[in-house]
Image 1 (cartoon, rainbow, N blue to C red):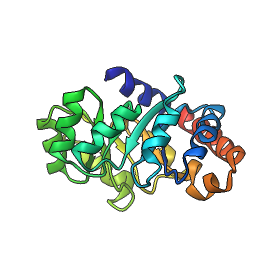
Image 2 (tube, rainbow, N blue to C red; image 1 turned 180 degrees about the vertical axis):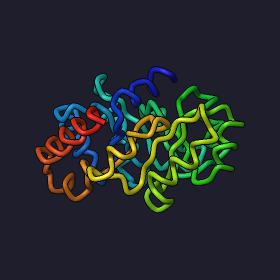
Image 3 (cartoon, rainbow, N blue to C red; image 1 turned 45 degrees about the vertical axis):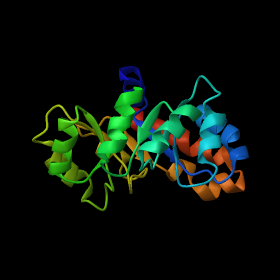
Length: 209
C-alpha cells in the first residue's frame, strides 16, 4: 500500500479520467505517459470504466486506480480489473473496510473535520478533500488540516492549472486530483496530443511547487 501512496506523492498529480469508450483507454494511457504522468484514476461513472481499467492496467508502467467508488461490491470489481487504488467521493465505512480486507489503498472523500476523525478511527492517514474549491479551497484546507498533523490530503474538485501550485504548497497535501488535462471532450475527440501537452505542463508546474 505504501508504495502506491509513495508513487502518488512523487507524481503530485492524479488525473481524474472519465472514459466513455474502452478503445480510448490505451491511447490515453500513452498520452499521459508521454506527458510524464504514468497514472490515472478511472471513474466508475460510465459503463466502460471496468474494461478501461483492465485495458490500462495491462501496462505495467501505469499506476491505475478506480474513482467514484461508492459501494463495497465495486471495490471487488475494480480490483479484479487491475485497480491499484480506490478513490471515493465520500466516506463509506463499508467501502473502506472492503479495501482494507483486500489490501488496496483507499482515499475516501472528506469535507469536514468530523469526517477526518472518522477516517483516523478507520486507521487511514490519507484522504481526498472533495469538492475542494466548493468547500473553500486552499484556505479551507489549510484551516481544516491544522488539527490533524499526521493526515495527508488529495484535494480534488475545481483544481486547475491556475490553483495547482497553491494547493501543492500546503504541507498537508500529498497530491492533487484534476481533470483539466484529460477533459472528456478532448478524449472523445481523440486529441491525445493535447492531453500530452497539458499533462506535461501540469507535471512541470507540480514539480516546481
